[in-house]
Image 1 (tube, rainbow, N blue to C red):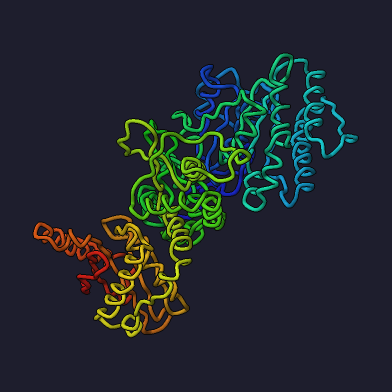
Image 2 (cartoon, rainbow, N blue to C red):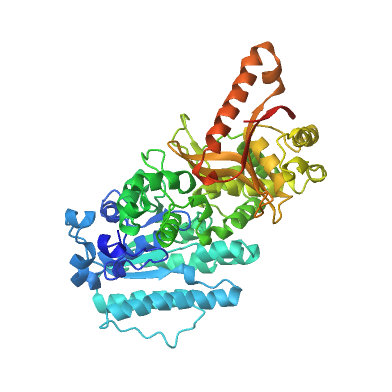
Length: 594
């Protein structure tokens, strides 16, 4: 079918202006029912709701603006007919004067630029308010352009003089964006703006002053990514409530599977692709899904920006693509940001967390840190570092936890797992002289041979070295995968490529992940792909009498898995050599082609 026949809608990737979605025929996930909770008397009038980057927070903020602002009243039916909140027929729609500020616009090059830029962001919000309410007069031309607090105070005073009511709704998007940017490159500047009498504390104190007594602010809504700036917000605006982990808001950003099932047929011609929306979701799930923000939530959500980017590519290429190979370019900085987070904790804390990751175990803590104040402590504690990893999306709530108290966190998906892998390689392995002194023998692979005994022997020699020197304190299957990948990846060049946990589409089995996929002589007539499935046992498990079945089972499981992966559609028409490799401690005790 053609696009005109099935009337595909436009993809909203990179777009946040909710008021233009219907005018420009854009598809969107209906998050409107979340608004109902903001009208509930049990929810604070001043909530702070955090989510990782690229989850659709800005679109949600713009939806709130369209729903609550009086000036959008004549467009209510146009914008909200057919949505879930429209069916509720709440009396609060279009009943406030809304002003919104987008702090992602703040420039962080240096202190002077930041101060000027912060002022200009407030001006942008005020000018937008004046355009929607042309009868409201407010001249700020003679104000000191480095004094944002005075500007805001005079604006709220002018509002009171004109409207004579406490009916202002303040929306702040990306409240911590510029603070996080500064933190990644200039700790002293970060401490300056978030410390006592700093720009942030003073600004939020001004907001609080306008909510009490004869002030004009009735409600606020603040969204952002992390809690690293919350102390600056809450000490100046201590009536704000962090509602990030409330179960009613679990799905406020990101896509659920139900939402994707509605969205996908609107964005891609599934009949032409020859697949169902469920099959596309199944393929996206291990890469983009897994995020949960409340222990009581019954659903996980997908990273919405990644989903929309992938569906854009599927529609453009008109074929069923591997999601792992089409990641949103906006995620390019995620690996660097993870390393930067680890740099803000002491080495012992980082090593503890990395060792836990290599063991494949969840991360347990008593509670999340809601206010992380680097003005009081210069290094993240374990609790603070894990909390930041959660807020930024590197970790998420473990819905399968059996903890009676506290909270359990896990890595949400394959994309984030690989970021941890690359960071671990850099921090744990590449800086170790013991790790880098050894090489793996890939001569048999490069010659496209069937016997990999020399490769297996070099793996044993390498693993013996790093285990005896405690480069790896704990060896588990995940650590085995990672450490061998790291050594092979050092050899990457035009004709040699290695992939870790490569996503494969196996007919009738869905999405699977091969441990190591090594391509040799890439791009030549002699190209060959070595598909390797790894299993790890301790020496005790492999050698004692009761462990005989354990070793046999490991060999059988690795063999069956690699044979299954060999049939993947990704390998159709290619020269594939599939191997099962089983290690007992550092020793490769089985390496056979299947």
